[in-house]
Amino acid sequence: MTTPSISVSFLFIYALFLGYNVLELEASHHIFARYQTSPKVLHKALVNQAYRTGYHFQPPKNWINDPNGPMVYKGIYHLFYQYNPKGAVWGNIVWAHSTSTDLVNWISHKPAIFPSQQADINGCWSGSATILPGGKPVMLYTGIDPSERQVQNLAMPKNLSDPYLTEWVKYPKNPLMLATPMNRINGSAFRDPTTAWLGPDKLWRVLVGSRDNRVGVAYLYKSKDFDHWNLAKEPLHSVERTGMWECPDFFPVNTDGFEGLDTSARGKRVKYVLKISLDETKHDYYTIGTYDVVKDKYFPDKGMVEGDEGLRYDYGKFYASKTFFDDEKKRRILWGWTNESSSVKDDVLKGWSGIQAIPRSVWLDKSGKKLLQWPIKEIEKLRENQVNWPSKILEGGSKLEVIGVTAGQADVEVSFEVSDLKKVEVLKKKHYNPQLLCSKNSASVRGGLGPFGFLTFASNCLREYTAVFFRIYNHRNKHKVLMCSDQSRSSLNKHNDNTTYGAFVDLDPTQEKLSLRSLIDRSIVESFGGGGKVVISSRVYPTLAIDNQIKLFVFNNGTANVKITSLNAWSMKKAQIN
Ligand code: DQQ
Image 1 (cartoon, rainbow, N blue to C red):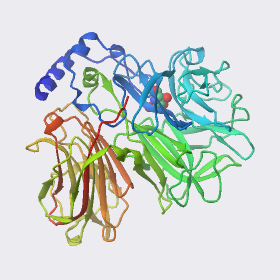
Image 2 (cartoon, helix red, strand yellow):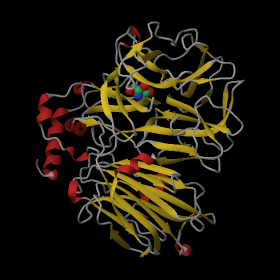
Image 3 (tube, protein in one colour):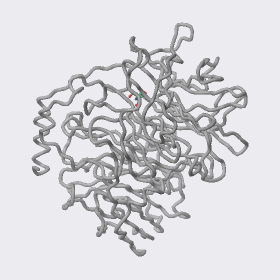
Image 4 (cartoon, rainbow, N blue to C red):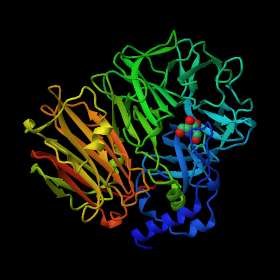
């Protein structure tokens, strides 16, 4: 193995010779024609595997994207995902398949759904599982037909007594839904069927994402038998100027408590969530609202913002997500694809691209105005070598190293208390874009109360680090807490996307502690602020802070002191992720 700095410059020079060959299709992903197979020479070339995750799901090699059809069947969790069997860029898409008994350790099976019919001969794109009454799972997914049209297909398990459901058969009458001149649907923007739900009239309903010019649309189809599907007169919902809606997800949430609900559940204490993956910005946003099952219309609650400025599951890298109801543990679980921030050339050289974020439990916050998210409990079984700090003051301008954990593969939680609120900086304008505020005021910019938080993936002399932190402001006589994940100093390799992410966390620092949990895993920092009110995932590729050279600090670059009320950190064992 060469030293990291040599390998990075070698990769870069080598990559210069490769060049791009990019085709744009209405497919939401670039097609890199030249990279559809991995040239043998690259397999043997320097491949820096320091960035492969220890406990975040990824296959041994190649490109992955959206999670598909997650579900639990006979006590076994199934994860399908978009996969290119031939290379580290998008293309040749099939449904890869892995199963698990704990959502942490996975075994892989052969691809479950791959092109085999006219209705999917050019690709098997995203879709969702529905568990029919009696417990039989079925999959609705998008196929690409011989004319490159996007159509909706059905597949079912061949043998229900096999809990791994390794064989899938396609419905011979596919496609079941397609764009026609009659329905005026755009056949190159018609994809990603949701989990179906059953209405009081005993009809199944499903959504398919689309656009009509730039109006984002969730078309509604109804069926009495899962076989014949009729397009409803009106879409369930649409929003102007949002562009193509990919991977819609529509599900009920309890108004009181953590418990998840089956997708067909109804009742007085039930609200609905509509999540859309915005193709134009590659962000997943959601609204909370009500669903009129008679009119078959969804109404976001007053004050909900639609489109890119709306609430997001994750303010970093997280896309094409999908939830499912875990009826074994009565919770709703969210899966999301975390793409690379490295260049395509580097992805090709390392031979893989894309991971799945740690599955998260999602439930409605007491306010009813947002969802809360938390990594599934099972992930905690990977924790070892706990480090626990008693409460201590973290002086302004200081940092403390968290010693005793494997800093590149860790789970760390800290809780801060602030008192010196006179020192907060003032925000004068009416509106602020939190992401821009974070980029302008990076971790190295001294503040009043903050920045304070973690320096993850820190190298010895701090030439590299990824800072995750809070900064408190006074905005129109109210305190505003900003959370940032700052990649400006993550890597000496300047070919990565080093966008800094940020969001405001809805909490009152005079009344509540500021908690931060980061799941650190070799090229990802997945951070949960305020107990899951804001989540930010960053992909980073340090060149100095790799393997056992990685350090972890708690820092405070404000002028005011803050109090650490508790800190717990663990090394994370390696999971069986493929
Ligand atoms: N990825 C799939 C599409 C979906 C997009 C193709 C979202 O079905 O719209 O790989 O990332």
